[in-house]
Length: 552
Image 1 (cartoon, rainbow, N blue to C red):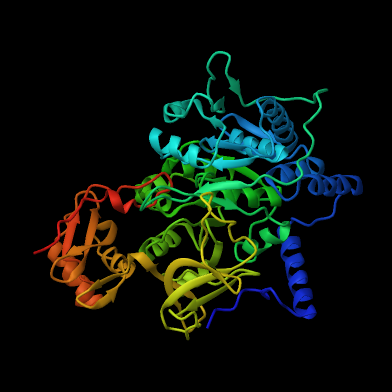
Image 2: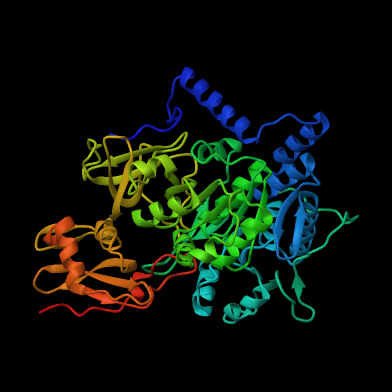
């Protein structure tokens, strides 16, 4: 049985009272967060007019915020603060420049940038032109970049000067625009200063441009996934029903904006008219320094970033005042229960963990209370989201029974740019993950369908093995994966990163797993490595792990 969403979910067919309750709940959440608030009537009218013109896009959000709070600080990066008025003016000027080189409704613009206001400004400009924005991963090679640009039909690339080497294999007809850094002579660049112009703006598009996010590509080539255009602030209300962000927040976006979670931070901050704090490169001590200096109240991060912060010496962590921090919102990959508990013991009960994907957006969100009750949980569905755990015949399974996780909400993706999609039935999209719902209504994710191995006739998933191994005091990180085995068909291999100065005994690891999980979960191979291969969003790239020969 699926866990109940917080607040009344809205399936495709609902009664009038259910729809009314949903609307009232949504309004209450938006008022509490400050998205809906009283203001000068003339500004409110202009704000609504901007949203009607540009829709609930990045362009529409910044145009509306410019009408409502023009002098409020929108973004703080290494160049300093930028107000909503400045963001809107720069976005308009960049839209004109892109329009001159042929960008319009049928165009796709690639963005290859680190986190800074120029990245957001480019999304504003593309939104004003109705062009699709393809968020390119800074961790790709030059060859992968060229392949991704070609497969997604990119005709213009806006890139930081420091990432120019990744553009070397792009065909010459692809127009280059420099964002952060010095552009080449005669080259186009993102405007960092802009004023009111007498030049006419391009006409508003007939349809909004879409955001295209690349999948992580941890097991193969990344695919472009078309993100749906939000229908309005009610989509933000879903996440805000479980993560209590407010319009007064100063949100440090450490997760890369080209990643779904970093992008979500920008979109939520835009809806809230909150101040976003951005740094181009993640460095754990700099995160703590920035929280102190900018008095950040929220942090958007991926799990490996929290691991790096916790790896800092205690004396370094205690050097910075992080008492302003009331929310640490994390997503992108599984977090070990040990990391969850250790982080909250140090920084307080401020951690929120969102389980979702590029394809389904969000599925469940675990609050600090959920994770104190059960550190392995992925939480509960937020407002307006349904999840179901189904068996192989598509029937919902009872609590405690493992099955395939399916999700339904208003932000399911619109398909891959290669024309493929995910299976959807009764408004529920498959996630590709397996899990179960416990007696408290909390979802637990066992792992990917394709991560499961059959060893000696027994089904086993790597995530519980990872959770068991990382509790050993000498283990800093671990990833477990299935490899071929001539005797048993498949077996687990554990790749273990020890803490500096500590030794890992493979036999101790095996004995510990056997005590906790049983013999079919024991990794026959325990490989000690200095670090795990990760992509730019911190996910482990399993295909780059040292290959293990089949056992004879």
